[in-house]
Image (tube, rainbow, N blue to C red; front, top):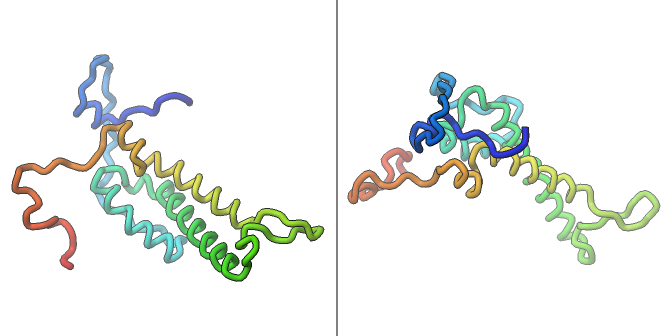
Length: 164
């Protein structure tokens, strides 16, 4: 279905319901922070740990969302690996900097790593929009940084973070 994506039910309650349409009850999902899937390698798991806590805090990551979040993290993994290999080739190739390789008949062709990196980035951006992980996606649902609860909030630092 094309068009504007639906606003989550809890945001309709907060922002109001000017059309007075029935607001469906949100699914009740157990509020636990999911662990990264076992098939992810260390790069992808590190990205999972980086984004999962933020998504969970915003109620955007539940056990139902593990597959989609894993796709995002695996896209990050492939992007990082492709970019690292391109950087290694760039060091050895002073002329094309690894962007071109010799094709089947000896003619220069685009390095396949560029396509891998581009497709991985596209996959990441698509999934990132689903999780409101881009500024434009957050603006569509009205999400942003939480305002301080008082003028003294934050004076002692963020108490939710682990000690330094």
